[in-house]
Image (cartoon, rainbow, N blue to C red; front, top):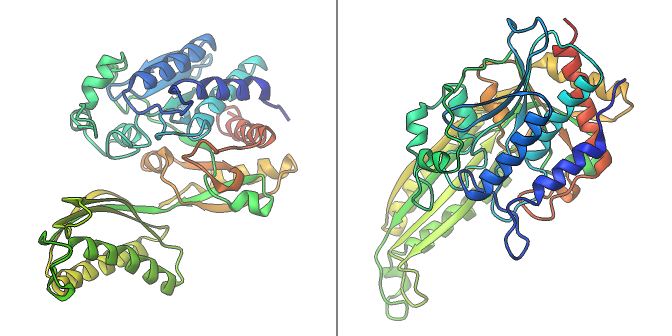
Length: 410
């Protein structure tokens, strides 16, 4: 069995992880930012040094393409993830998948292997969706799920326009999104959850991914004096909003289903300590690996909102922000991941991804699967995000095996 250069991989993860830190040491590389440019520049430098062809499409997706002799007519095997981060991030989320993909290609080149089809490392734009919505935007555009001009016109949380920001940082490419149609796509990622570490399992063979429903709820009541307005005479938008979060928690606890629900943001108006809120605006994130259950949960929420509106004397409106159906990954690739782990003496298990990933978009157009490695304490989107070097190397070696099976076996 071949093995990747773990020292080179881990060194690059740490080096990229130092790009985009503020004076307090917090890592933030939001899509289209100056920090994003610096991270992209470093990645492109490594890709070019590896002797790969660099292509950048109009939405800013970066591709490093290895075309072996005589394989130009074959659809490529695509690997990768993203390098944008959340605010005050860890260093592994997304970046590990991109840099491990590059490491696999370099390992095969070092071994003198000639792939039967091109192999591509991809870094997709705005996977996190922190500055520009929706998340997984670059991969969504790549697969044709969103028109590129509409995506480029997206306005960020700071009022910036995505297309203008990509041009500003030099990553508004001239290649049309989707120009590379993959034979298959494989994404290596940290789990971002506690299961693998808790079970002492080295490799997660991800067989499906939860559906995601994002909604913004606006509740309009009446502002009034907090001391002089009797409780029974209030039209309190804040109280109505609080009822929603509590209801979702209790409903899912009773259902005994794997569904999850999160009220992730909440804003009150006029936001004063002695004024009953006249408006509450909040987001609801619903997820379930089964489409029917997810639809049922959406319907339960809608019914409860109607009930709250009547009982609290408020008006409620809902805006859908994003909606992605659950994804079932390719059984053959999942089996190849398990076979590699078994051959290398690594304990593995099949599992569901609770987080969204670029892989769920690529699954629309090509056989796709994901490989997970453990996350310490299940922590991610946090500076404490950590995966042990041995686990990082193990995951990259499994990816190497899968790539050899798909792209190098003829």
